[in-house]
Length: 306
Image (cartoon, rainbow, N blue to C red; front, side):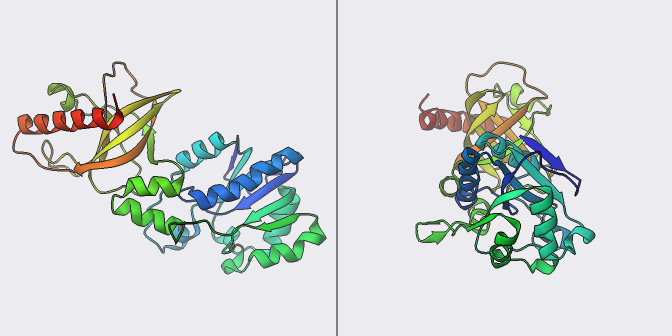
């Protein structure tokens, strides 16, 4: 997958099928849009995602500033799905002021050479969000592309949206969030050296420091699948500040992999959160912490079936 970032004058090497949006969370509604692009590959079009960096609400200073899917996580998901080109369009005062018609004719038609544009019913783009799907329909005959509106996905009588996923993650309902995402909620990042306290109690962990803007579920213990390179491992993940062993407030993601032996420091791990086990606790001693973790591990083996 080709990744285009920090430029506004990129020209596609071929004709494209394009979808525009933030794609925060890459949930089932987003995947429905992306499926439309992937279907167009059979017609020789390059499946192209056009997204913004930073998100408009972050640039303008409204919203929480917490994101469901980091740039690196999004790149991994899109590449895995088969997207050909990912445009991470620089969003700034100048580009935000682009008239909506110019946005379509310059960026989508002339530069991306769009022949197919898939959009949700609430799509906005251009100066003050003045561009909508109706503008795409209006311009399609003149500029030689087809515009297709993709309705929102509904499950369990709920519209699947980033807002819904954010609420579920915030309340720790990661199992339900996974149903609406199409895969478990992830935390992706490099494995770094920690204080090695887990080794002192015979339960070594892989440590990650999540980005400050990554939305995390409530602090606690989760059962997880962990992808490192081409391999997937079963694990138990603690998200939090380790109150038993530290008074600092640095948030870490620490994962114990059952029966794992190896040196993976510096490698990138994708931790997929499957279900919540218990909240993070402050124990009276390391021995009490160890006993509880051993119980967690045993229950985790049963959960994973290993």
